[in-house]
Image (cartoon, rainbow, N blue to C red):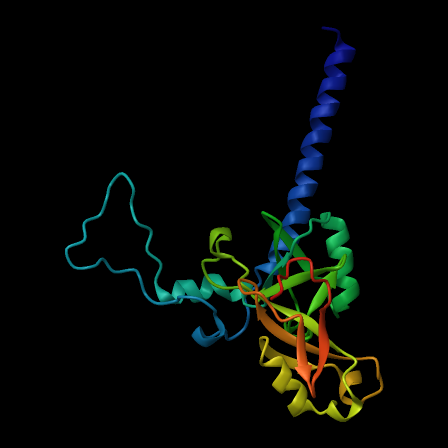
Length: 251
């Protein structure tokens, strides 16, 4: 092997080591921001079981081959503090690239500070927020639709595992087509919505009766049950439309 070859190899090795060091530093800065402890986090702010499990039950014996790692409540709170401002999200019925997802999230939520989007596998992501107002907007101002599919948004909870993340209910936008204008009253519209799911909020345009073509309601529906496709009012059948209804079955 020539001296030139040895020199080239050393240069390549040095470049690889430098690149790895820069990657580690970049990742460290991200994790430092994400793991910065939240000030004055209490037990009530943590979602999930944060009870004590650092004591052995009566008669329980420690397995030397597979020891049990016990975590006291205070340590659970400390571990959870940096994630209490995070959300778990999943796009239902559709797969998009990571870059596209992050771009659409920022466009929809328009956060005041940058967000960290962590791919935890099986098309599930954890989104970490810096400001509470950004967190609240993403959690409460939905439903959110990306590529004509609903985005499920859930609070992060302690000891979150992919196998424990299931989608049995979903907030969807429902349209009541051709409803007469005199029925554009919140109490009456919620009455219709309760026959189909759990009403969450009304569309502002609907309440102001600015759109005479349809009314729109956000409601929580059970995905395991068929949903209504129509209802009868004054001997006339009115149809129900669901926006981005790729996974919804009808009666």
